[in-house]
Length: 204
Ligand code: GAR
Image (cartoon, rainbow, N blue to C red; front, side):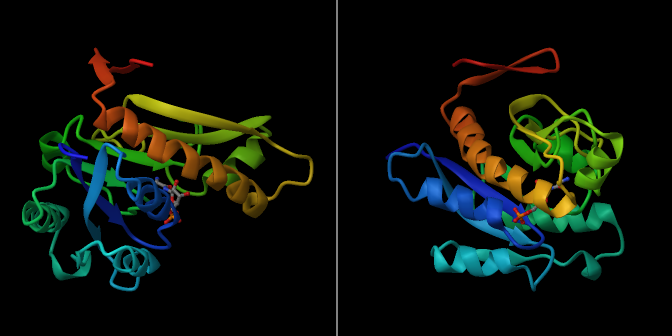
């Protein structure tokens, strides 16, 4: 398919959401393709997934830079080499500085394992359990300066079961993550997401 959106994926670890995106992009009719996978962690298993799919990888370790600003500039330079038009954060566990977020405004999405705006940050599943919520889930959203905030593109909900612990809940939510992330990327790539104020409106 011509005119596919050129996507870079940023990861830090396992990369199961990256895999869901790679699998979706393996369909020649999918409106986006992954042109590079960047990790801040050289040991991230997701790098292997990308290599297996024939996608170029690059590592920019935050440990090599004195602060967030210089690290983010290095990430941006690395992405520039691949003519990236759109970014997907997929388990990328670094907070990006305001300048980077502004540069990629409405061209960078993230997946988070909670029904935002509830439970941004870490330990989301345990916190949901501790609060006794009856429904949990996951969210794909445009990235704004504060971590795990921004206009919501897609969400999926799962019920909490009586015997759930953080691990079983995370596993059930992850199945939904793998479903909504490619769907959200497709919506963006097809130009079916527009902004109204700070809300993302979906042309279904
Ligand atoms: C996923 O559950 C993702 O939602 C979460 O990290 C995990 C990465 O798994 N992201 C965040 O918590 C972002 N705040 P993966 O590497 O197997 O995709």
